[in-house]
Image (tube, rainbow, N blue to C red; front, side, top):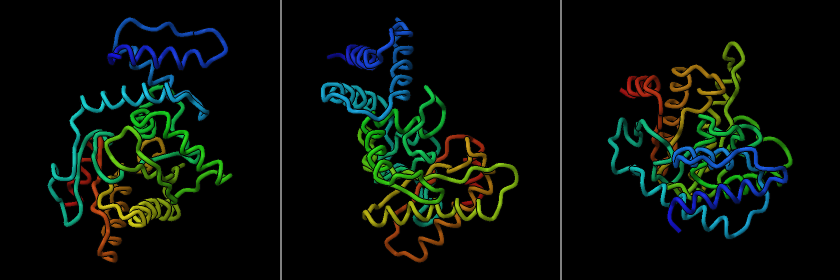
Length: 257
């Protein structure tokens, strides 16, 4: 199959899963077809899917991955011992783990083509990631509390694992509990990474997007928590603070000196 043929196969497969007639005609433009596939993957609930689909999907996503510039730790300069800063798409990082800012359902974002990191990570990983998350949550039988973390495979991402954590949602003034929960997110992820003997972990800006935690305050908590953990644990994984927006890059660069 060519990449275009894989794309069309995946779209038709996902549309045919719905019992109602197709509501969205397949666009002619290749970029619009890619957007439609992402939407269908975002919307799809975590249910059994055929091995044929997974085989074609994985081939498609791996080909997409090869078209990206993959960034490893060796490409980056240290800002402080064991700490790096990188601005870009977290799904391009070839680290032992990347951190996903999840919601309490822990199943990824169901809003088609939403701009959140949860949506981007699940889209690039493939539908297997949502299926694994669903198995974890079915066993847990309760929503994921803020400050905890779960680990999954990374599937079609260039990293080895994805660590999912739920940050605090800010409604009005930031409280001491909010700050403690955000710190707990970073600590829980580091603890989980250490338990799996991971050497590197990339953190996104947890809670600062849809959850409205003030960016600079969140960055200060993130840096302080990581530095405290690294001081107390000699075998702590190296940390990349991954930012996407210029605002966050400028904050972290200033705070890291």
